[in-house]
Length: 524
Image 1 (cartoon, rainbow, N blue to C red):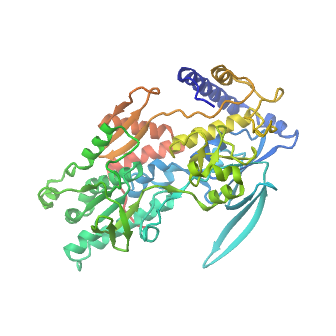
Image 2: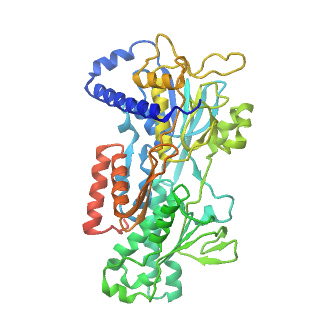
Image 3: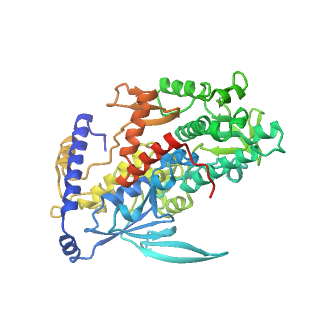
C-alpha cells in the first residue's frame, strides 16, 4: 500500500487518461444493439450508490452499466458544481448553470429520489424514505432496496461544533438551496436598509455581513460579496454603500490554511484593499479611509443570536446576515453505517472521527468488500486526505475502474487477513495503466491501491483576481500564481471541470451577462 514512485505514477495516470479517452470514443460509436446483447447474459450485480456529489457523479459516469445494475439514491436528482456556489449566492452565475441532472450523466443508471435511512449489512438491505408534499400536507413513504454492493458517497454536513445559535441563525453554503437563501437574504438586507424609517445605526447593522470561517469557502464568498457591493452596489444602492461592512471571522491566525504562506498573505492584502469603485459620485459619499472588508483573525465564536454574534474575547458584532463556513461534520446516515459495521470500524474511529474508515481500495473496514465509501464521508485508514471535490472525484473514478475490470473485491480471508482485491484470471481486464502499477508495486496479483494525484488548489479573491497553487511533484516547491493570471487559471480550470458542455456554455454566458448587464437582484 506504499505510494507508487511519482514518475511511474504519472505514467500510470497518463495511460489511464488515454484509456478513458478511447473508452469514451468507443462508447459513443457503439451501437445500442451491442449494448443490449451484453445485458442478456447472466444476472448483473446490483450496485447501489448513495449520493449525487462529486464522488458519486464521477463513479456513475465511469461505471459500466452493461456489467452492473446501477441504482443511484439521493434526495436531490442533480449534481452541483460546489466551488461556484459562492458566485451563485450573489448572482455571478445562475443556479441552473452549475447543476446537471444525474440522469444526464449516465442515462442507463436508475435513479430514486429518496433519502437512505439505514443499512443492514447482514441482509444487504437498504431502507429508504421519500417525502411527497402536496399543498399543506406531506406523505412519507418507506421502502427497501436490496444490493450486492453498496457505495456510500453522501458527503458531509456543516459542523456547528455545538455553538449555540449557529444552526438557527446562520446561513450555510453546502447546497443550491443554501445559495438561494443567501441571495434572498442579501437582497432583503439592502431593501430593508433602504426604508426611510431606519436610523443610520440600524442601516449599518442591516448591512453588516459576517462570514465565519476563512477557509476557501469563506474567503471566496466574502470575495464574491465584495464584488457584488463594488460592481452592482453603485447602480442599485449608491447611498447605502457607506454602511456596508464585510467581517471575516477566523479562529486561527491566518486565512486559506491549505495554501502556501505567501499566497495567504496575498489573499489578506487583496481583502484589505480599498473598495474598487469607479463611480466618482459614489466614492464621494464614502467616509475617508472607508474599509469594506475586515479580517478578524484569532477570533472564535461563542454564541449567535438573531442579531448579534458574541466572540470568546468578549466582543460582539451586530449583523444583518451571517454565513457559517467553518467546517464539516458527519450526516446521520454516515454515523449509522459506522455503527452497523461493528468493532473493526469502531477501532478506526479514533483517527476517522465520524467518517467511515476505508482501506486503500476504498472498502469500508468491517464491510467485507460489500460496502465501499469515498469522498467527505470517508477516511483512508492509511492516512486521511483533504475533504475536497478533487479527492472525491478521483476516488469515484478509481472505484468505477476497479469494478469495471472485475477485480474480486471480497476475496476469501486468509489466516484472519482480509486480502486486497484480487485478479480473476478469466474476468479481470489488465490494461497498460495496470501493468505500470504492477511494475511500480512489484505485484501482479492484487489491484493497485488508490493514490491521490494533487492537481493543485484554487481560490477566488475578488476583483477578478485569484490564487493558484500547483505542486509539480512531492518535495518540490509549488508553482504559484496570483492576480489576473491566477484568475485566468481559476476560470479555465473551473470551466473545464464542468460535467457537460451545457454547463460550460451557461457559465460563460453568465460571466458575459454579468460583465455587460450586472447581476440580477430581482426577487420572483
